[in-house]
Amino acid sequence: MPGRLRLLLAAAAVAIAGVGTGTVALGLPARPAAAYYVALGDSLSQGFQPMARRGGAGVDTDAGYPDVVQAALSRAAPAAARPTLVKLGCPGETTTTMIRGGICRYAGADGQLGAAADFLAAHRGRIDLVTLDIGINDVVRCEGRDPSPRSAACASAGLAALARDLPVILATVHRLAGSAAVIGLNYYDPYAVDAALGGDGPGRAAWAAQVTSRLNAALAATYARFGIPVADVADSFSPEDPTTLCRLTWMCSGPPVGQNLHADAAGYRVMASAVEAVEPVALARPVGSVRRLPALGQLAGGAHPPAVGQHDQVGQRLPESGPLHEPGDLVPRP
Image 1 (spheres, rainbow, N blue to C red):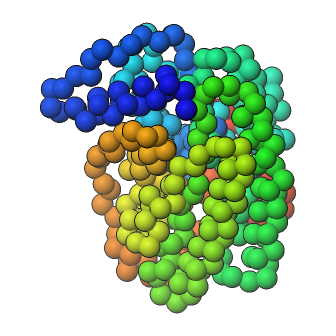
Image 2 (image 1 turned 120 degrees about the vertical axis):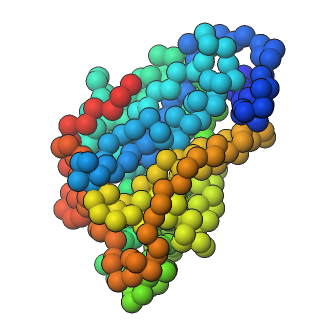
């Protein structure tokens, strides 16, 4: 792990621990300016949130887990040396589309991996941190449904695509990241909330848990091949306690924003803590307000929506069937 990033993380822990006490972290050595933190992945890397005023359609926000991590790093550094966050993630991205493109547009590159490769190569030696969350959209269409041979075939196909494409992504990032810290993320299971519902909810929850477990096992094995540590988001979301998922995602919210599988602001802070916990010195978890949510019992009998609609925004949807993705007109923020 680069000493520069380790020093920043340790100093950030001190800075956060001193918030509200008048304590100030002093004596942080200067480091070269114009360092970068590059966040890659899917909608979670963009802090994607459903918006009530848009009828549930979502937007990328500045409240995602990369924003929380970057804020902590910035508090630990002199103003002139604060790392710049570069968010290249794409809502709806799969491991395949990350390589081939087809959802988000990137100037001078066919897809997210090409854009990331260009940026990493152009800023070699100036990258502090790279985070990557990718893979959930390879199987998300297979989770939110009853177990069946069709669902099993869907999951197997998605995991086969991940096994083929994730090594390509990691080889590229690992080669170009240089001495930067690279951290992968696994995934929480949003459909665990179905366990508290009546009817066939427990069966759907058990199937989703199986798919998520297979996904996270595949991620862990592939990241390990490249020596990349994995932030344990799955356990951080306490899958055995559906009420925790209600507090950290939009799965228990009513229309128009719910039920939506994305993390809310509190959930993104928990994800950031999982990233930070990969380091020997973990940053203190920020404490924020919690949305008031309906009780799980009020959702009894109401199944979550299918994968289609989970990433709705202008010009972009994740289709339920047919081609895995359709081209959209979202241009990620640099």
